[in-house]
Image 1 (cartoon, rainbow, N blue to C red):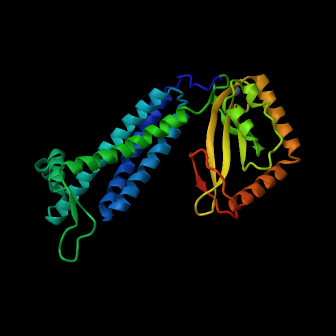
Image 2: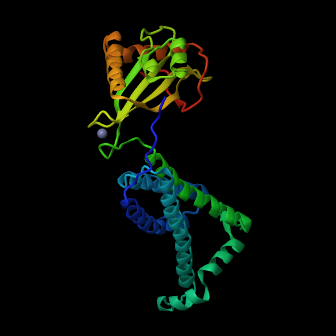
Image 3: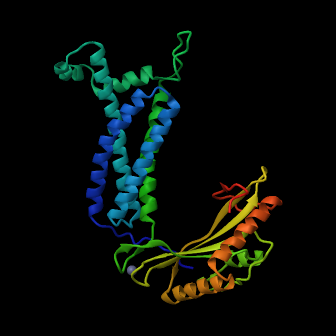
Length: 334
Ligand SMILES: [Zn+2]
């Protein structure tokens, strides 16, 4: 079966947009570094770093979408360059903030800044930082200054920080560049145009879907529910709302199991991602959706039946399969 492959095309605006992202990132980097500086608790600093990484993740994804970048390698490259610039800027911001503090402490007037910068340049600051490091935790009552991070550990902290910021940008870009795109309409596709939840499939049916060799096999499975199964097969269609040239099918197996604390858990196993559908297969998918709905009476009844099954499952022990994306659902849910 054919899955969606990004075409590798992009608009030249991706470069300008990435430059704009880097400029905004450098400016936000000052706020970030200021926060890191005033917050005395390392755990909160980690949260702030992760937050900034998330912002870069979202920003890079947004820029990739706007620049219509379906070239995964290019999306990663520009995001990594922007991420590195932002990271380098945060280190430089740390230096200027340090210099400001030092000048204030020594009562050096602001107009002497050029002299101070000359006497204590950025590379001296880096050396100083590696030698003195930071202290973890708050100073103890006995006058101890907490656990210091020095030398090689300073480099390690910088490396982890850079990894979070650059990695965030790269991941955001990759995720966006891999989203299906309609090349004929020159537009991104939309997710969840149609979702079909096949309730309580027989284990045989699930196996047939897992081992299917054609889209038609996926869309011709028995739809009669098996009362003993606490799971459903979820078919979702993403595609172009304007034409039939870009339709992609994703199939997941959502199971409800009971954990050791006797709580119901939903586990999602990804079976197929973004399979290419022909216009004829798209019609088969629509017919399949109608069949499933008709068989269940209505979509609402389907949901109710599934919810009842969830409740029943939470009272008994069920075997576990598929480890991905487990999320806790209280037993009374639904
Ligand atoms: Zn289209």
